[in-house]
Length: 544
Image 1 (cartoon, helix red, strand yellow):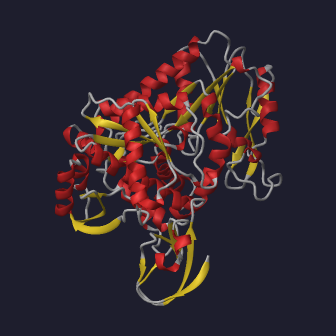
Image 2 (cartoon, rainbow, N blue to C red):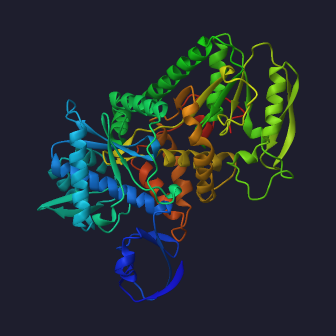
Image 3 (tube, rainbow, N blue to C red):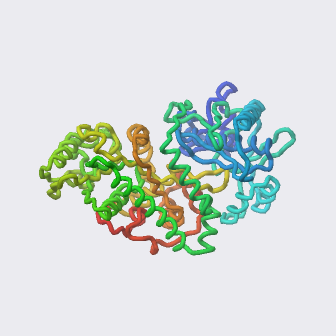
């Protein structure tokens, strides 16, 4: 980052020489993320940093631009097909045909799309940002057959819309992906497109991989969970913002809540039965997942589900084993396994399973000290439910045989789209949950939560995601009604973030995501719902 004096009406691209231009994908100007086509209006000194693919904001713009490009290629090749993008396994995007229903994608189809994308990249087509009225946007969407975009645009409060325009082979293509974009298609020369039934995956560079494309890993258990969720939401017409809003209008908010909670109850019943059916005695039920997955409420719910089957577990949170401040090494991330007193945790779990009495600790998040908790003694074959982000880590309870453990991975897995080309990010979904919860329980404002989020994400990539395929069961904690319920709680928090702060861009992205949802109240959410962990009113007193 350096201070640069620029003249009035200077485009950021003009500050780069021709060799540099396609090395960078956006810029940070006085702390704000700007497209490279951005024009600085006033002469003056500006702090400017050009960002490459080692930067998270740059890779987000790259990923969104890639969806635009693939959607354009598909529309040029197959004008009548309706394509939809999803976030998928192995940090990839997944694309499939939504309509007609009987259309089957095969390797030849994918290779044709791949070649068309490569052709459009070589053409280096400008991506022109334009501002049009809602009526004009609807006109272009009708011409291109984008019914999904027409359905959601009516929930937009402004009377204008930003679109990106590209032209190739005499065809004008208009689309909006709810993101900044790269200046032209020539920037998008790093990607992999791979047939992956019933569609194809698109891989792009990732900032956490130093700007490289990670190796594709076929995460079978997680993929199955995503597919199950996707089918359920599509079958119930809860797969887009417009469909969720229509459900609320057609039935009622309570009807939507009841449908979603019934699915959660069914999944819990299925899980409880699987655990009850395990032949060898289960001593440890390990529940892990990334931040704001609903681990605490879920583990409490599982206690009662197992009790209904004659199994009486006790629940222990790994958060109570955080190192006290006099043992905490400065600079250690709270998401790191080094922040947990693993030695004490393992010792006490071993003692409990041997039938000894143990005094459990309770971690005080205000004083950052451990306090003395309750005395616990296990009965023969009584299982322990442990929950925490590191519960599936191999260093946890390594003395206990794998056959005596049942491992559960929990995370919200929204397969919901704003429109066909804009899937809702699983990560942004959890960030919204955390903003809502932290403001209520820890007195932490949205700005602070957003600032600490990169550290949280770094810990997830290091310690959580590598363990998810070790799970015996993957539980989806997403509720299609939750963005409607969170909307009016999160928006005032996000509105407090000033436009002159670098976090404002993230706040705007989150606001743009949730503002399309019809708001609903929280009164009808059951008191034992996982969502109560975030919106308040949980019947579980220890829900954090």
